[in-house]
Length: 398
Image (cartoon, rainbow, N blue to C red):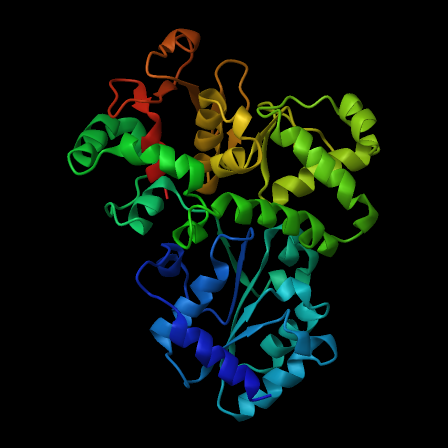
């Protein structure tokens, strides 16, 4: 079992620390059991290895182990941990836990009976893994890693570094904030690049092959990750691909479940469930009307692709400015922890309080002028005025 130490040391040695996601400083690493969930490609593995290298280095008392290692096809993870404890290891960074069938029970037992060890694990957001295991949910502190914000993209590309702003900051001081930021860089110059290839950190490796890798991530998410959903029928994988293709080529999409059911051959109730799973996989974002009770058995009122990069990779012919604007705004607000719903007037209602209408540089407040706490979000402008805010500025929320 010493080969796990060799693998871990090799990965730690190769890990770069030049650019680190802000989530690193948001996590309280003193907790004994930490879960980091997120979609494929958002950088969970990198975060684990960066933390290991930064805090522990090589050949110390911490180790990285991926639970999809072929060794665990015929061996128990808990036995590996017990052996490594005898070697002085007391901190375990575990990747892809959802791919190991008995992961929750074994981690729970380690947490309960090995009081001196610490465990940090990553898993897919699609399986809602902590909710499935109530005993573990009471023990683990959970974090989610989204894709890069526009602010983080600027940092990753070396353009500039800024602190994030709250939504209240932007609503009350957007003119001052935008004026200050635009004196240091040109936001519109880099904004199109972010919309096209800046959401997943692996763009740094090769921008030319980025769309191909992103398409592969979608395929792997549907083919592999959905297998870990309780009760999922793998024979329906092809139908989910068909459903996702329909959604991707028609967003923003107001779903007619009866027509979708007839077109895909998926039963109505199952179809609504699969839409729910696609959202949990962070492949789509859905909106429900204000005041509607949201559940996995209720169809959403509007569907978007989860981020604008998916538009360019999967449906470039539909990557029109209107779709991109709305998808970007929805993505950045949801990723920064805000509740978003579909209002009777305007495009988005945030936190049951603020109404937003999204448009181009010439968009006026006329459609929401009679609504209290309403704002117009304008694309293709560097700064705003009064209740008109530049779209790119919402990329500074996280």
